[in-house]
Image (tube, rainbow, N blue to C red):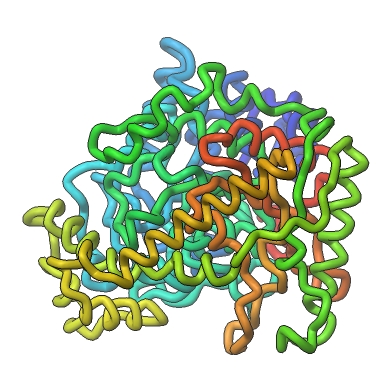
Length: 520
């Protein structure tokens, strides 16, 4: 694509492919461009929103056959870009994402595109209205470029409608789930930013495996209205980006009270009036105290059953990250011990299975005449479901939906959630900690046909309801697979979370673009 007068682009997009053409115009490909940079390009007049959208559509066409990350491309994206270009000329930018394309996980409602959860029954199901966060992103000037493939009904990285998504850093390995398509698409720059959902780790797992920043907010900070649920006590949406700056921008847009989701009432007065972007502080690690959950840092491959060397490769990067944090002025408390950590995380996650059928049936009822089926049972009986989520369907059918709230195991799980949160509060208070740190995943992404122990550490956040963020922390030396560091803070301390993650990111600048998906 040629853009006249774009000579200022080189300074702003130093990582891009920029070359002078014979006629003096400039060509560039938005590899590794951030939302912040794209917004600046558009509002400065260096490029139009339509031209940006065309570039990303070209990247999807060029690369998604390899990744299988997209279910639906928005055919109206170019028209919306035209509208935004006209509005910019007439009255200026409509918001902080003016003209920025967004990849949206396909369990988040869009009133102009199907929302499928990756299931073939929902291939043509267009919800009657946008999800709350979809509307917020559009109002901020964002353009929904495409709906991303996902682990069917939010589990795994395989769906009956979209098939298997592949990891751009190694096409033979898992991209992480269940926001697999968002992770792979943003990781390979088929779109600059995206949104995933997280019930047990589904924003942060694909974030670490695709070398992205992934934020899971405090439960209740971001509305779940219009999102196909898995378990509402755990569900939330979160940004998936290449930089902490873009994450902060998106969180400013997505967070807030929504009367359609009563849980968001907890966020009232908890959101900083100056916005989360005000926490982008280069010196944000100075005089902080960070506790290391050593239990999540593996150093003995024989005990884990993971191939020798893989966890050690991850561990080396995490140990290096801890050193970097200390060099930046943080006091490291190593180790800290969370009483009954694994037991409480595992048992505290049990309620998801009890909530699934009831919550999904409520969502289907909200679709009205657009619903292809009326109940979870009908989905199960259709025989369309692929992957591990079928077990969740079958298990939930054994539960009496009408008496879930009286079930002893369900109530016990909720109590374990509360106990885990209490233990975290106590440990952080007694050690005067600002945050806890640990590897997002203690292992590299598994090969697609590999049966490997989990090594995933993301459930601590949803079970406790404490927010967390995963940030790129390097790549394994031989396989060149991404490693991520996770920060966890107390509820509604997302500002502090942004501050810590930004200072670490800017100090280390670990993210690298996957080599097979460069300029087209």
